[in-house]
Image (cartoon, rainbow, N blue to C red; front, side):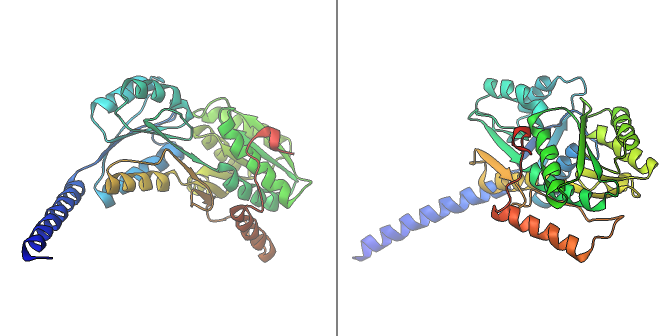
Length: 330
């Protein structure tokens, strides 16, 4: 190769590298913005919404990602989602299955806007779906409940009777019966995620009928259940985040649905890549999407602890398949 060709080649490489450097620098300097539409109960639910919010706070503090949030106590999600679009966020998150219809409606109006739907699936091109294997974490809670129960009767309180909440219920039942096939499990649904008094009333009825451990997937309605459990001296399990501090004498563990981890990872991908290329995400035990909070108020034997660890390993490996729908449960 002569000197002229070498010089031209060096110039081309230099231009290419300069372009890559400028693009990388521009992406690093850009302040990405995320908007989130919270679900029914809003902030302060000690559960789902608060966990997602914590993930965004971490993204702000560690990554410099900006965020804003909306609440719709009147249920008018579409209006608030439209406001987030008009504020020109790089990504807009709809939190919870109750937001799905409104999110899809707004997404159709703004096809260039990228959206993320958490806890439900959408087929729209500009909506990314992020779901969890709640049944896997709930299976472990069921095992703990069966280990802790003295009466052989445990309970489950759901918020709204939907396929999503069945994941929690069925996993809980499967886990309890895996450890103790003779355990009795009773279930009831509040019909709402923000009625703590109704949750408390259901728990009271359970306790009258000999239930001595209750698990919930009921948002703020579950707050009332947990407080009633403590008041009556029985055990409880929280959900989504570690709810021990709601009732320190009652809560044995919580099913950690690490929405905060998932939201942070999405924010990190947005910052690093400029957009989200995946169409869907699924977080289970192997992805650290669900798990158990520390066990308190009871002491497991070495055999019981080993049983939980073995079950977790076998769920991850696929040896144990956890039911997620009622028709699949025994």
